[in-house]
Amino acid sequence: MRRQDFVRAAAGTLAVVSLPRVTQRALASDVVEVTLRSAPLRFSPGTGLHFSGLAYNGTIPGPLLRVAHGQRIRVRYASDVGVPTSIHWHGMLLPNAMDGAAGITQAAVPFGGEYLYEFVPGPPGTRWYHDHALSLASARGLFGMFVVEDPNDEPADREFALIFHDVPRWSSLGAAERGVSSAPMTDPMVSGEGMQTMHRSMGDEVAYVAHCINGASYPHGKALTIRSGDRVRLRMLNASPTQTRYVRLAGHELVVTHADGNPLAQPATVDVLRIGAGERYDAHFEVRKPGAFLLQGISGDPLESQQAVLLYTEGMEHAPPRSEPQTLGGLRVFTYEAAGGVGALTKSPRGAPPTYDLALGGGGWENPRWTIDGNVWPNTPKLRVRRGELVTVRFRNTSDMDHPMHLHGHIFALTEVNGAPLLRPLAKDGSLVSANGGTATWQFTANSSPGRWLLHCHNEIHMIGGMMAEVVYIS
Ligand SMILES: [Cu+2]
Image 1: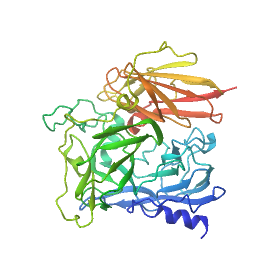
Image 2: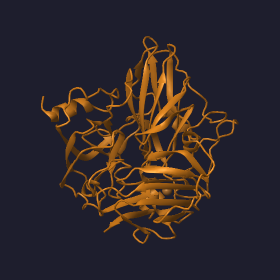
Image 3: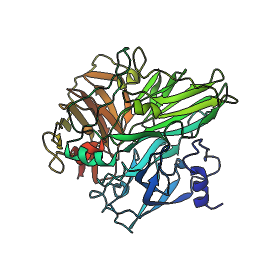
Image 4: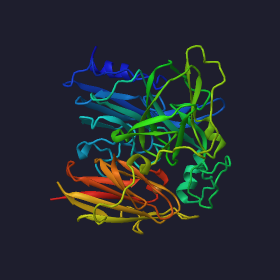
C-alpha cells in the first residue's frame, strides 16, 4: 500500500470515530502524503437542519489525520472556496513558514489556489488543524483533528476521537462581528438550582442552530460501542468558534491525562471537563458495568443537550441511556487550578525580563473592538524575543467575557491562574483567561524557528475584532 492510501485508510471518514493505531505499520522514515481540498458543502447535522458550510474533503469535521511521531507529512492544500483560506496546524512546533497564518507566514490561498505544507508533526499528542485567514471559514466547517502518536502512551482497549463543534446561524456571525448580536451566553450555572441561562447585555456572541459531536447532533450521530472492563481513551477537541464546553459522561468519572495533547504531571480525576475554544483534553474511563450512557455537553442552553453521543455495551443499544442533569452543582469540574494544584509562592512572581503584561479588554454593545492594551490588531504590542530566552507573558482580563488565548508555534507553561501559582504548571498552547479581572501567566522558551508567531484569542469573533498580537524573533 502506498503511504497516501495508508493515511486515508487510517483517517477514514469522521463518522467512524474509533481510532486504529498506525505505529506498528508505519515507518518513521515515511513521508505521509495527504491532499486536503476545501469546498462548499451543504451540511445537515440533524433532521430538518441545513447549513451552507465549507469542508475539507467533503466532511465536517475534516478527515482525521494520524501519524506516528517522527514521520514527515506533506499536505497539498487546494482551495475551491470563494473566501481566502489557509491551514494552521494548531499546537504543533514547526517551521514558521508552515504555520498557516494568512497575512503573517504566508499569503492567503485564493479560490483555485494551492499551498504545500511539509513538516514533521509534533510534539506527540492530540492536535488539530483549521483555517486561519480571518474569513470565518473555520466557523463554517474547516477544521479537523490531528493525532501524533506517542510511543510512550499507555495502550487503551478503545480510543475515540470526539470533536465538539457548533453550527452557527449565519446571520449571527455578521451581527457578532459588528457587536450587535443578541445571542445569549450559555454557561451552565454552578449552583445546584438547576438550569438557568445567563443573559448578558453584550452583543458579541454567535447564535447557533445546532451543537454537534463529529458532525451530528444527538441522536443523529454514530453511537460508540464499549465493553465491560474496557479502559477507554477519549481524545476531545472543542472546535467551537466561540464557546466553552462542559462535558460529562453519565455514570462515570473521567481521568484527565493530557491538556492540549501534552501529558499532565499528574492525572486529574473529575466529573466534568471544561474545554475552552481550541483546547483539547485526553481522558480515560473504565467501563465497570453494562449499560448505555450519554457523553454530553452540560449547558444552560437547552439546544446544547443535543450535543451528545451514545456509548453502549453489547445488547444495550436500545436501552434508555443514562444521562445527567444540566448543572455543575456539587461536581468536580476540571480547572487549571485543580489539575496543577495551587500552592504558596516560592519565589517572586515578577518574571525576569522579557516579561510582557497584556491587558485584555473591549467588547460591549455595538463595540466590535476587542483589544490588547487598548489597541486592536495590528496596533497591538509586539513581543520581541531573542532565541533561547525565557519569556513571561502575564494577562489581565478587564472585559466581561472569558478569552481563550492561544500562542502559535510554542508550548508554554501555565504557571499562574487568577493569582494562584500552580505547583505543577500545565504545558499548553492556549488557556482561558477568565472574565472580570482574571489573570494568567505563561512562560515559554523562545526556541522555535525565527519569524512571526501569532498570539490571539481563539474566540473567532474576538480575534477578528482585533484581539491578536505577535511574538517576533529578533537577532
Ligand atoms: Cu476573546
